[in-house]
Length: 382
Image 1 (spheres, rainbow, N blue to C red):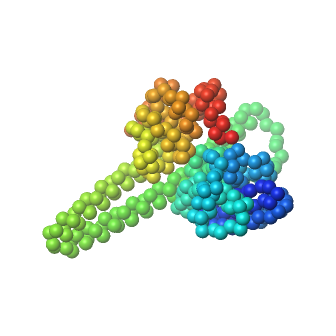
Image 2 (spheres, rainbow, N blue to C red):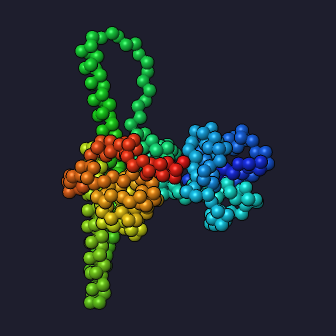
Image 3 (spheres, rainbow, N blue to C red):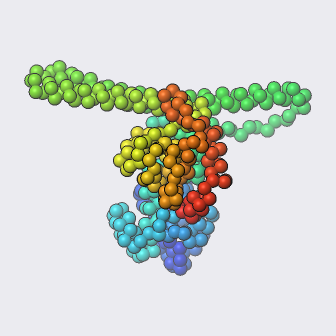
């Protein structure tokens, strides 16, 4: 059974196990004295494929990490050890009565892990549904959670371009010139196949945008006809305002679609678009995320006083002209790049950085950069 699941595990003499699916449905909840590891693994694998094994403490008990390792998935721990009141609140939200504290701890761990990744599950299902690729859901989510890809689109591309195993064949000895030519041809054929599949994915994505745009135009036409049927001046004035609002919304959506297409093209050309904000605020970042989905994106900001707000969005990096203070570095979970240390240019009216230059810069930061930041970052992560 390949159903993706989230497992909460409370180890001990009396151990407890809680299992959720990625739609927050409780599939299994049990506690048992002398709950053996073999029984636990059997219970989990009978229900589905675990995406993560979650505990309620930080750092995690070794037994939780070992169970995750045995099942070939990642271990999850909360940012801070869950308090009794927070566990009560989490379990109460799901309307589930538990028989003992062990089950409460296991279920609260699973719910906390689900909440931390619910946005990923929703966006993955939405995108794959629009592309007619829901059969890839479990594998896409697994790739993103393992950090083998940067985002959902890259996971889809990777799965769509997987090569089928070739049938072994007898290799006839050829001269070096023929071998080199054959290798070049094979490489070009592979690149062509990758591009063809990328084009197919983009066509489906663009079609979904066109369908949404058509629906908006249909709504606009509906109100236009309603306006023509009415004669009262007050009603006409009200309808005109509504029509103007719809026109503005339509223009904004059309502009957004064009901008998203530009981002796609820039990505294929080796650039990473920058999302620029004047100031980091909860409302500003929330609106930006609703529009562009800033997970694994690069943010450009001048004022980084509230940089820790971006922790919840799992951004790739923050670029700023300000030298970050020690206090700021201690609060963030992502790399901060000083603007003067990387080349920013405008391509097709979009601020971008070269993908290779950015990746090299991030490697430099991890290898020889801000030692204090790295030490604190590792402490928070592990």
